[in-house]
Image 1 (cartoon, rainbow, N blue to C red):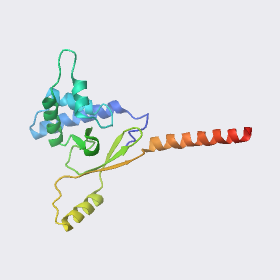
Image 2: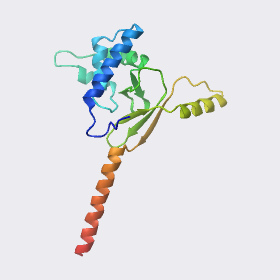
Image 3: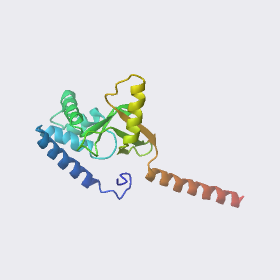
Image 4: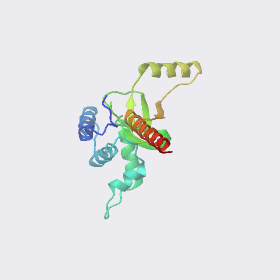
Length: 176
């Protein structure tokens, strides 16, 4: 999977691919990707960070037309039902699904510095969680696991900044 936090990442290709995939999948499933649903999905894909419903309402509204919250929430419900987006519970936000072609349980890695959300699948982790839930007598119906930390790009930047701070401290010590 490409490093979506990398400044050289071709994000325009992500948006195009996500919208084309959504149109293809909706047509195959016999459901309508209405212009509003498409606009909501496109706004979600504007970056790889979580976006809240009220931010979507603001972005989709104009001076002469305000998009109402129920309209956006219905679009979000549709996109969730079709597996085109994921809801990030801890952030009360939404992010585009990188693999909408098949139903899956995903792991979301959320960078605490830049906010980029990376999606990954790991069947072994999913099976382990299902097995543990079953042992507890719990029927697992929905699963999204979230992890927070630093993406590779932010870690590299942090290490570069740490090196600069260390060099500055050494220079200050040498001047004394």
